Image 1 (cartoon, rainbow, N blue to C red):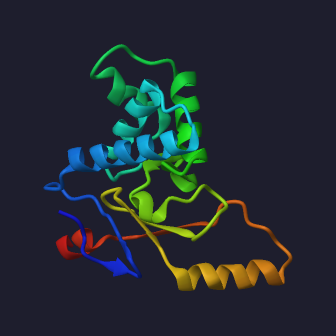
Image 2 (image 1 turned 120 degrees about the vertical axis):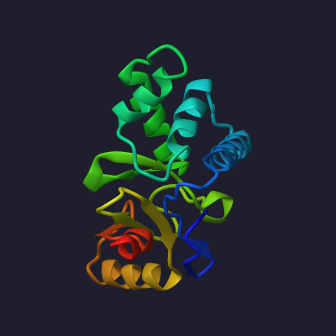
Length: 175
């Protein structure tokens, strides 16, 4: 089940045990296939597998976590092939890199939030320090405020991503 917190039109996703990750993976892959076809991108089987591995959980995964997930279902992929797939997924907005954790997560905003890095709304990640869950959201007001700050400084941001650490609602409730 998802956390029902809303911000603007975006739902904030946080990890829950009874959540249907297969549905997330199917949606993420279908979205990536549609965008790739529309933009003439090669969405290879390796990229599909890496995206599915990321989408099976809303907890950010390192490249080696992805390798381990893929190896559980078949041959162990070469790290370089996984890193290349992750680079493609991030470059085209299908996944995000969580800098503070040196990890990756599938984009949960789908077509509503499909922006290549550096274009459109700022992405905010709410990172639970207890359970590891990550919630993704965006806010038009925050994007406007960041644009005002960066423009005043003459700065051109390439990837407006904000990471906020704390405790998710479930962990706060538990204790």
